[in-house]
Image (tube, rainbow over all chains, first blue to last red; front, top):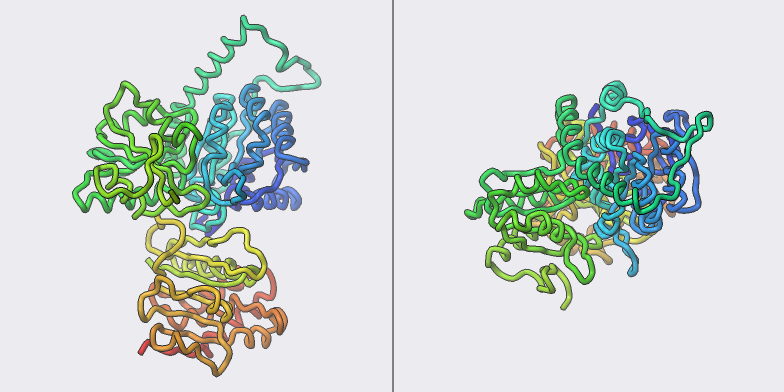
Length: 386
Length: 188
């Protein structure tokens, strides 16, 4: 059924349709509506789940870890400072191989206080072992939640679904809401082989010496790298059933593209428009929406940009003392395997709109055109004071 | 694409009005995108909300720099915000304005749709005289000056009834009255 719905409401509805069994969450702008709506759904009996009210995001994730370990489908939502407070438990969830799905509304980390879109919050959790997916529109929020549980419960790793704060969380769009029966057919109940069971006690997370620790890490890395393929397959099956694809790498006019604008999150729309406009000027441009950042989708990414000479990479984040985090990731992926030049731009942090014009201007600068921003280290910063 | 910018004060319902308008166009079979410029409104502060309407999903996001129509819920905002920013000459401005008065500096430059929404809201018992609820009333006036893409009055009134939390019929009736009473001053 088609309807007009806001991003945060969509995330809650997706959790309902995914039949989550435990929700433990703490409200924080711009995610709050999701948590409120889930509380309502459970209160009205429209979702058969346990809602655990907690005193902090650290406890929210701890509760999800416990719930997931007993074999329940667990869900939470957070943002920015809340995600940062969860940090320790994020490692627990991934190391415990627990298929929790979490919505993160991308918002700037303070100080100074800012509630608006910025990717530093999730990207600074990139080494915790969570799968990270970035939504491009409200439909993506709905669909990727189902794909996330499918993948998480197959590979036994947690998934973070990222929504650009306000650009998605507070934006209402027309989406197709699938029927419960259709979702049930795509996403069967969670039934793990191993779970905490009082009738059949066993020990989890005990002390482990060096003899096994490295091997476990190696195994976890192997399983994490396999997510790229697992997600692609889950997306392909979703596309076959629902007609919509949500692959780790989503390209626009890449077949012959010499210049590729790379974005994560909602900027992908403006990137498509910019690439189309540049084509009219004779620049053979395309755009690439990098939906998955962890694991980095090495194979699909290298293949998608194999013909490109220039990559114009947008970062709504920075690794202080390094450069834009997405640009770093791309350089690491392409090192020794591509001669394409990577042009890193930092823009859009703290809620600055990313427009077609801005991305087109960045691309023109990358190709030798007029300077748009201030060069610092390996990045060019847009719309900043010197 | 039709781009709509709405100006209001936090608590006045500009965001709800933007969602109702989006829903109405959706009911006419179009793609819509509605979003607030400030998600964490403080009561009384100037806020803006935007709606994009098109035959395909909008790829652009964020502020609409050159809107095709502008809606102003509170006349005092004219002193605080440049509501004409980015508007081409003749662009419709829907303005909640006291009966019998005209905003002199806007007359002739834009197409003005003036409606005393405060009075209509009070007549329909929407809010109080000091704090009338006028967001849906102003949408009735909007109908008179925006022709493309077509939006049937009945569709808007239905979207209003579905989109407000209380006094559904009163809101729709007030919008209908505004639609009938709006004063339109064309660009000279």
